[in-house]
Image 1 (cartoon, one colour):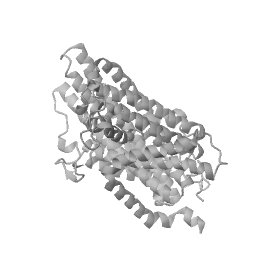
Image 2: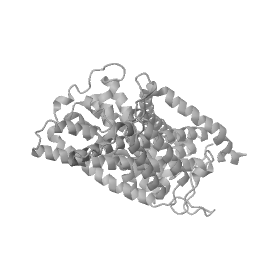
Image 3: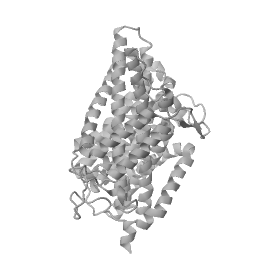
Image 4: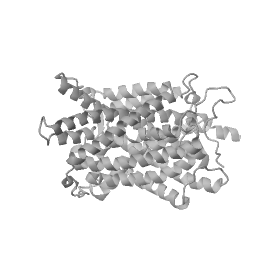
Length: 495
């Protein structure tokens, strides 16, 4: 029988060891969710999803992904209020479906957070170079980095083979991951405060973008709304579904809220508010941005690491140079680039904050080395895991492009979400007496629907990236077999 005591001790453990600090309120948690969700989805992946898969029907891709997330979000809210610990879906699976399933979910969460931080850092690098180009235009100096130092040296071709691009390394991506890792190392309060400021900036700029560009929408760009299929998942309804898989990456922020449960002041009340509140706000903003971006520029032009800036460049090219409209749009572009840099920074921050806390929970259960469960005596953060995650994420960000990393993140996330949906039903049957501050309505319908929606979207990416996800899973179970199984506290306590 799986136990429900997964996770860490409350603040001030009996052994006198340093533990995580409960300082976060419902407002902090909603901000953390928006901080993680509003970023890559709008500023990076909208372009790829529209140009390669969905066209103007990207709006429908966001609706599909949002519905799947909403169903999973209800299940997360029940678990997070019942098990207020730092391990997110890993801890929930540990408590309901047993250790082997928990390891599988935890290993997929590593894929989710680690690769997400790297993916977003690559997008950050694109906007940073755009900022340098703008500074060069204003001053007459050449600031932009050469392509050899600002883009990935490896990519996958259409046949799925790893090929070199001729560049050296994505230097800005490495720098931003390193800087944020240092901030996360310093403490949760500082990280949450910085995140709240960034969230305010980027939401204001997004609303400003929507207001200013509304006058430049050409409904003709929305026709045909679902472009004719060009083979495989390139446009057509199959493209809309494939686009939903890619933009699902954009929604993983509400999952990051649950990794901070061990540091929430009143997790039973605040976790559902943080998860569902951030999900609702972000879905509305995503749909509005997808409609606006495909309405102000031809969707095929948006396949860049900085699609919002690309769309604005197109609009700028249609107005008279030196006109009031030109000045307004030029100023807006500056704001957008700054907001994108700030917004993507906050996503990297929340991802780099979440991953070490999942390692922390897995370490306390004996499945990973004890070092990953160490908490810094002064900063009260899982510092060993933070350093390791920072190094690996910086390496991935420096070497690989957005699209491959984004697909892997989405697949790992979707598997974890599906497991959480199943776990709620299992625990309702096996432990009905447990107090639940929040309960999923109509669980016999919501839970299976959530799991089915997530697995359906997972399959769309799995068809092309199957060898990567199977390889990742195989590596994970080798680690479990050689270390986790032998050192499992659950197994050792049973003997």
